[in-house]
Image 1 (cartoon, one colour):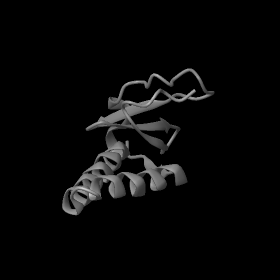
Image 2 (cartoon, rainbow, N blue to C red):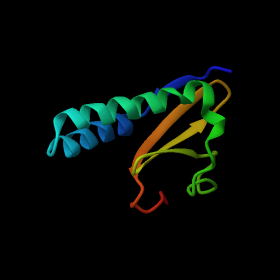
Image 3 (cartoon, one colour):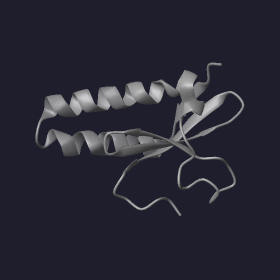
Length: 97
């Protein structure tokens, strides 16, 4: 099954902040990292259910899964035909409340 993929405004903001942070050291690596991260998120269109439940699952009224890329966790939810990417969080941060 192919899902429709939606990013929240928080995700777009996180992508900009992550890129800016990495670009302080190397802009080419920052661009490559973000492109690869976006590619991983796009893979959720077809392989979303391969990802485990996130530690945040059960704290809200819907299922939350995560996909790990590098030091980051991509948090998302799956509905009938849609994957909504909720947030991108650094792995060192505390889970969402």
